Structures are given as C-alpha cells and as structure tokens.
Length: 281
Image 1 (tube, rainbow, N blue to C red):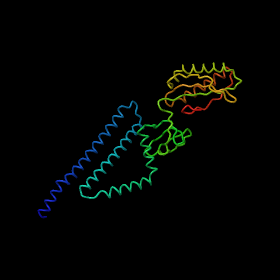
Image 2: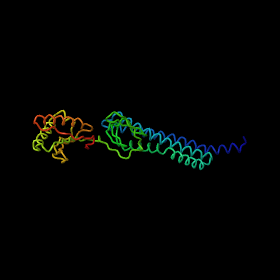
Image 3: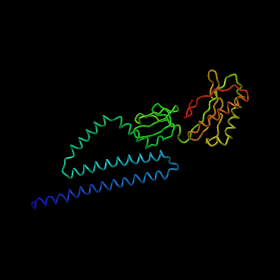
C-alpha cells in the first residue's frame, strides 16, 4: 500500500470506524440498561404484590420478555442503519423496501397482528387473570391460560374454548374484587305472602349467623322482599356480597335452608331462579 492509501484508511478509521465502534458500544450499553430496567421492574412488581400466584408471575415474565424483545429489535434496527450509513451505503432503498415488506406482511398477517396486539393490551391493562370467571367472545368460563395470541376458557361442562384475543370486544369479569349471591324464590299466588316472608327472613338470619358461611361473605344477606309479579308466580329475592367466586357456596346453602324451612312450615316448595356467576337471572 502506498502512503496515500494508508492515510485514507487511517482517516476512515479515525472517523467512520470510530463512529461504528461507538454505535456498537452504545447499542450494547442500551440493551444492558433495558435488560436491567425490565428485570428491576419485574422484581418490583413481584415484591409489591400481596399474593402473587404462579399465573401472575408468568404474566409478569411474559410482559418483561415482550418489552425486552421489542426494545432489542428496535435497538438493533437503528444501530444497523447507522452502521450502514457510516459504510457509505445508501439506506434509503433499504428503508423503502422494509416499508413495503412490512406493508405486505401486515396485509397478509393482519389477523395475527390484531390477536397479538389484543393480547398485549389484555396483559397491560390486567383485564382478567387465570382462574377468573369471564364472558368473552360469546363464550363463558374460567380462564385457564392467557397468551399473546389467545385466551383459553373452560366452561361448566368441561369444554375448553380458545378465543383469539383480536376477537375480544367486550370482557365481562364476574370475579373482580367481589361477587354477589342472588337467590330468587318463586312461589304461587295461593301462598300466604306474610308466612313466606317470615320463613325467608328466618333463613336469612340463620345463614348470616352461620360461622362457616360467614367465611364466604363480605356483607350479610338481605331479604329484598317481593321482587316481581310473574304470570303465575311471585318472585322474592335474597342477595348479599360474597368473596370473589364464592357466591355459589352461599347460593347452595341458602336454597337448602329454604327447602327445609318451607317443608317444616308446610309452605309450598318454591321454584328457584337460575342465578348466573355475575348475578343475572
């Protein structure tokens, strides 16, 4: 090599070469910072949780992995473009080609992208957790698993439903914070309303005094009285606030007590309304 070539190479290394080294070092340091920040945030969330179940820990890990992967892709992409620019390679066609490729992939995989974005927002907003009783995408059941692409539900019959996250528009969660026990009692018009009300009031008092059932309840049961007049029956309602997902135990116990009380007082046995997990009829 002649002196001019060596001088040009030295100048290039002193400018562009040094910049490339700084870009690589900066990208590496930024990735290390992101990795430590995500790890610290994950540990903080776990340490502040009063009762972090296995599925919630998995959710934190999933979120941390998603953010780390997205950040790594962004850092690598920017660093690669900066290095190519230092190598005097025209990156404009690459950017245009990447845009067209991304557009083609977006059209071809828009359903998948929609599902992934939907799953990301479910995780970010903590819309529901594994074990919650929910109604999504036209089906109801207990959440068994949540991924970025889909939510898995198990209904009362044991059937497992897979609901793509992109198809979820409305989420009805019946196990957030508390639940409600609702017992509708239908009796015929030939029954003495006063006797029926008195019997139900005794059932409510006995239930509220039961230490075993008190473990499921947040507030005492209340006899609302005559709820509605149907074509051939009167409808009376008992209701109360319970711990999350524990309303079914209270409903069953109250129904059993009502049957026994009505039989003892020779009141026509009632017909019970079907209460859903979210308190509907």
